[in-house]
Length: 138
Image (cartoon, rainbow, N blue to C red):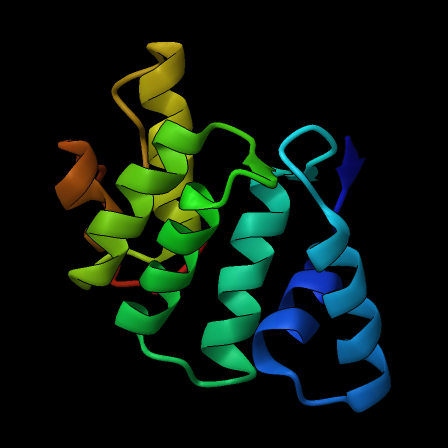
């Protein structure tokens, strides 16, 4: 198994640089279920951020990309259940994907309640601290 960085995935998805897209496509298309590519949680979070901020893709489009990656047997996502749950909730709006992944990790570890000052995330986490504020990420 090899690991894939965010830039490989983004170039493969958006195809906005001919040389880098060709390299990314060649690499990703060479992967197999026996020799898959690994995508860490951090890469998934960064990829969503780049697609959202730099390429202005809609949440629905980004969520669909995540679900397609999950369904691809030549790609292995770290904590796939976390990604699937976060992608589904992210599609509906509200908290950012990175916040949803933080909440998923807390749930998986049994580390609840999640203390946050982020109002959107606190609604999902079921916890509110004084001084909360509306935030997109962080």
